[in-house]
Image (cartoon, rainbow, N blue to C red):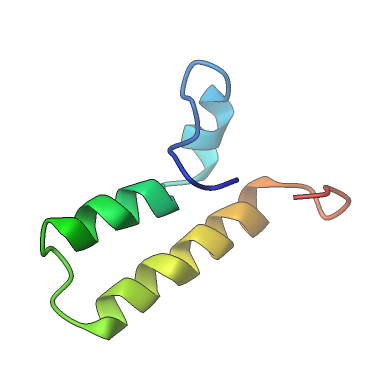
Length: 63
């Protein structure tokens, strides 16, 4: 879960609700490419993954 971007074809509504998608695979690429200039920048993306999950998924969801 959260290891790659949410499939746009399967969940177009996700991209209507979530304005800044983030996943762990994208974070790994950013890390490998040296795009994180600080620990805080990476921490921000970790939080974004969780915020997006909470925003999109129902409270009753197992996710």
